[in-house]
Image 1 (cartoon, rainbow, N blue to C red):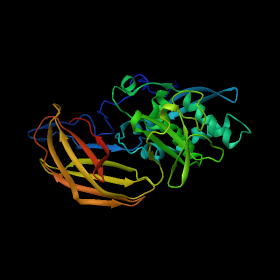
Image 2 (cartoon, helix red, strand yellow; image 1 turned 180 degrees about the vertical axis):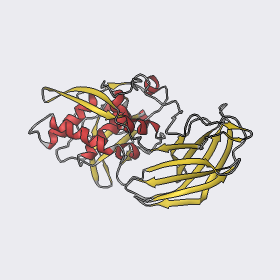
Image 3 (tube, rainbow, N blue to C red; image 1 turned 90 degrees about the horizontal axis):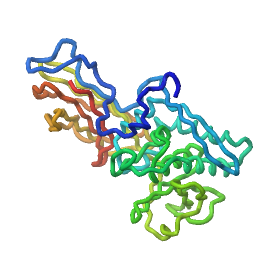
Length: 347
C-alpha cells in the first residue's frame, strides 16, 4: 500500500453498516435548547466523490492464453468512498454505467488490454473475463454482513472479492467502456446472475432481448468461456437489465441556521446519467441517536423531471426539534423508489 493510502484498509471493513458518514459540517458545533452554539453553521452532506489524492494499491494475477497476466491498480479513495456511500437499489444499470466511476473503470479495461500487446478484440474481451473470474468468490453474508449487497465495480476491485452479482456488474462495466453492448442477466429461480455480451464471435448459450443477442458469461469460477452456461440454468427464466439510457442522480445538501431556532434546507440535485428521470422528490429527515425520527418533511413544491445533464434545487425552511443531538438525512426518490441518500454527522 502506498504512503498516501489510508491505514484502515476497506478489505477488512468492506461494508457500510448504513452509517455512511459523508462530508459534513465542522465537528465542533453543537445543539442546545437555547439556540445555536457559537460557530455552528449547520448540517451538510454530499453524495459525490471527495477530492483527495489518496489511493488504494491492488495487485491482480490471472491466466489467459496459457500466460500469466499481472496488473497493479491505483484506485482513487474518493471514487471508492462515493461508490460505498451510494444507496443500494435493484436498478443494476446504475452500477454498470455510473459516470463518476466510469473514467477509472475505462482505465482498468485499457490496462487489461495492454497486458496483451498485439492481441485481438476477442483476446481483450476474454482477458477481461479471466480477470474477473480470478477474484475470490464470497457470499454477501460472509463478506458484508448483509443478505444482499450489490457492489459497485470499484468496490469489488478494492475488496478483490465478491459474489455472482459483483462479478457480473464488474465485467459488464469493463466491457461497456470497450464499446460492447452488455446485459445483466438475472436468473431469479436460482438466485444467480451472469453477464451477457453481444459479440460477433459468440456461440452457445444466449439470450435475445430487443433484437440483440447476448451470450452468457459466468463470472464466479475460472474457465467458463463466453456462451457456456451451467446445465442447471439452461431454460430458466431470465430478467434482462440493459445498462443503456440510465439516469444517475447526484446531490449535495445543507441545513443552515437562518433564525434563532430554524434552518433552511437546500438540496442541489443533478442528473449525470444518459436518460431523463421522472417524478423526482426529496424527503428530508432529522434523526435521533435512538433511531427515532424527530422530523420528516418533503422539500420543494412537488415532483420534478430532470433531463440528462439537468440540475435543480429543492428548498424548505424547517424548525428542528430541540434535541441535543440530531443528524440530517436526505433521500432522493425517483419514480416512487429510493434512488440515493446521504446523511450528515451528529450535531
